[in-house]
Every structure is written in C-alpha cells, then in structure tokens.
Figure 1 (spheres, rainbow, N blue to C red):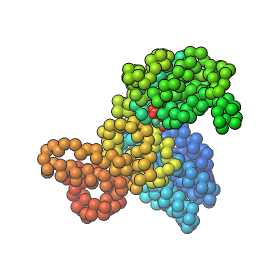
Figure 2: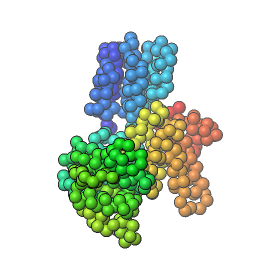
Figure 3: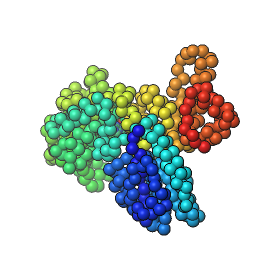
Figure 4: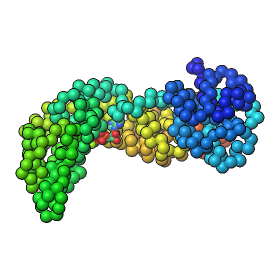
Length: 447
Ligand SMILES: Nc1ncnc2c1ncn2[C@@H]1O[C@H](COP(=O)(O)OP(=O)(O)O)[C@@H](O)[C@H]1O
Ligand SMILES: [Mg+2]
C-alpha cells in the first residue's frame, strides 16, 4: 500500500486545517497557504488528492480556478464555510473542478471517507495510464528503443556541419528531428528556417528561396532577402525536398558546393553559412532512378542519412505520447475530463497509426473536445471500430462479450457511478448488479 499524500491549500494556515478537519488519519499531509506554494509542492511531489479549505476567505477564486485547471491530475476536495457556496464563483469552481465538497462543520468520518474515495479513484486512473514524468524540455517524446537510438544519433550528428537527409513517413516527426539537431548544434543560437518545398507554388519558390534584387522583374520594387540567406548562422530545413523543381535543384546544389547564393536578377555572390537539413517522405533514391531528382544533389544531401521510424513501430511510446498531448492541450478540455479510459488505451494500442504522431495529436485533441464524461472513450477518438475482428466462439460468446464491453464503456463514461450507468443502459440497479456479477466486473462503491 503506497503512502496517501494530501496537499491542502489553506490561506488561514495549518491551525485552520486542524480545527476544521480534525485529525486526518492515514494521510501524509502537506499544508500550504498560497497557490504559488501549492504549485511548488506539486512540482516536487505527486499528489493524487488535494484539499481546498476556505475558512475566513483569502482565496482568489479566479487564480484558484486557473490553478485547478492545470492540475487536473489531482482530485480536489473542498471544505467550505457554510456561506461559501452562495457565491456564484465558488459554485462554478466546485462544479468544474472539485471531486466533492463539504461545508463546515464537517463530519470527520465523512470527510475521511470522501478523501479516501477520491484517492481510490485517482489511483485506479493512475494505474490505467501512469502520468508522465513531466519533462517539457524534451521535444522528441518517447523512450522506445528506436527513439532512444534516434536521440543518440541526433546528439552525435549535431556537432558536425555536414548536410543531413531525414527520411520518414508523413507525421512521424521529421521536422521535430531537424529542430532537435539544430538545437543541439553549435548554430543553436542562430535561426531555424523551415521551408516546405511541396507547399510553395513553383512560380514563387525561386524568389522565396534565393531572394531577388530590386528591379529583377516587373513588380520587384524592393530587394528581397531569400529564406536561405535569412538562415545565415543557423539551419535551413528543406521539407519535402523531392518536390523541389529540377531547375532549382541546380541552384541548391551550387549553394551546397560553394556556400554562396545569387539572388534572382543579381550578379554578386552572397556567402551564406547555414547548415542544410532536408527531409522527404518518399524514397529519394527512387526519385533519382525515375529521373525526377538529380543524382548529384542526392549524394550531396545524404552525407548523413537519418530515418525516423513510423509510430506503429514504436508502440512502447504510444501511452506516453497520448498523455503528453493530453497535457499539452489541457486548456482545451472540460474541467471534468481526467484522462483515457482503459478501452481508449486499448484502442490506441491496437490502431495502426497510418498518419503517425500527427494523427495521434489530432485524435487526442478531437477526443478532448468531444468527451462528455470523465474519461475519453474509443468513440471520442474515432477508434470505435477497433476490436470488431473476426468472430470467434459463436454468437453467444460474441453477444456476451458485446454486453460486457457496453457495460464497461458506460461505467467508464459515468465515472463508475452505478445509478447513472443503470439509467443510461435502461436497466434497474438490481439488474445492473446482476450483470456486473455475471461478467465479473468489479466496481468501487460509488453513487
Ligand atoms: N516524438 C515526438 N514527440 C513529440 N511530438 C512529436 C514527436 N514526433 C512528432 N511530434 C509532433 O507531431 C507533429 C508532426 O511532426 P512533424 O515533425 O511535423 O512530422 P513530419 O515532418 O514527419 O511530417 C508535430 O506537431 C510534432 O510536434
Ligand atoms: Mg513535415
């Protein structure tokens, strides 16, 4: 049994906690008097349960709401003076952010029960989807062997200035990888200029990349510095390099060989000291064989080849990435939403992720907006088809399995509340208990 830690925010100090709540038996208590101290405490230690004590005022409800919104991982219980809930700001705070609340004078027995219940639920959720060790400094999230290898490779190649060619499926993290190389390189204080060669109209790409001199063509009233020139002292990232028109491939080759460029309409060569990182989701060697990509440019660019693995090959990272994006976009979610249900995690593990990390981000964000309950379901993720594989065991087994799945889904959606689940399924509580026992589904006493 792990230690049960309770973080208590009480502007009126520790004495107020003691007199209002009595002895909180079995809890390792940390009492702070301000939100700033609570934030510091949460950075140092993980608390599954927190308590907000409002006795004699002293809380800024707006700041408190903002704080609770960020720290949704913790289940919060309120202990308020009897008049507190008359105030609309506190009512909103309680309904949006609190697991439960008690008004003074509180029954110590009931308060201990509420805190214990909050801890039990938070612990269940934590087991289903362990929270991230928060490390915002790491852009390339993941601990799977291939990502660990990729990170080591990035560190090795960051210090040299040779061109890098990154290959990987769309959405797998080529640009993140390029950015990591830049930020570990000696040029990290310089600019990182990203250009998507596929997204730029062919008619504009030359002047965008190389700039132009004043009067170079009709309408060129002023000189323009191109993107390559603007990356001087830093890194230029050429995304979807296979889409670069062939005539511009010659210009790029010249830049790689001579480290100088000519603006359109210009005659002077301009030295540019920028590292080149190119990326492609198609195999450039194939493009060379097909004749759409210059072989000499290919060899120049691919001095250091780097391959970013597709997400389906790093299944170990799925949970961590899903949690990472859930935290990243937590401002967009409803305050009640606490995380992923077990079925959602299972659906994430079973999906093939053809759109890679970008698809995962999109599905998680969409689910965070759509989710109505406390936990994200496979339906919220748009992955509800998962699990409908070939039928095995005949109709009876399939029917029983479907019945079990629906009950589990409904329990998750209602936060394992028996009354709500029974209502949603259109059965009595007694029938629901019978079904729970039939399918060996365990629930903690709630509702
Ligand atoms: N390992 C990762 N950790 C965190 N975010 C990632 C990771 N890989 C990709 N992303 C995110 O996924 C999205 C797609 O990544 P990106 O580098 O643009 O892919 P690509 O260039 O291969 O299409 C971006 O929002 C990026 O921040
Ligand atoms: Mg990209």
